[in-house]
Length: 243
Image (cartoon, rainbow, N blue to C red):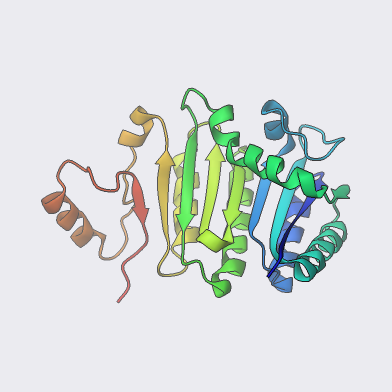
């Protein structure tokens, strides 16, 4: 089938509008290829300007649809309606030639913002299944709210087709935020939260198992016996083993 790519960019004054949009997306069940939630100040620092007039304290949400032309057009229209209903201060649909550059810039945002490796990137991995997508949106909504409670504004990219959510923090997050994110990941079996990149000194002092939870004593013993040097999957934060 001929495919078409569509993007919607929405600007919000505060986190409440972003939360409302996530709730609307989960309720509508729209099938997105990618979704990014980024502080406007982060985009400005990286020289990315997908929507004009954003103040540094604003949030910018970018949603990407990919599929048959008619279906993609429907999703883009619906996304614009949902963003406006959630209180977006501005909504625009970039032209066809803008899609590639915008998403390429977003993929390169992390390294460009953190050339010295002082930031931390966390990844929530889950099964790339349709019924997981609304749950992934719920994780992002709760994770961004928890980060805001710690005075942090992460750059977040959600890839439903890959079953992954990535959170980019400009500096190491406090342990209470890591614990909160771990609890969010633990709500469903088959998910795990891992540290993708972080400063080596900080990473070495984090407990990759982030427990204790039931059955983790056994996990630790098996890990210590088979991989005493912690070479395999360093920094992995696993969810609780369930029968």
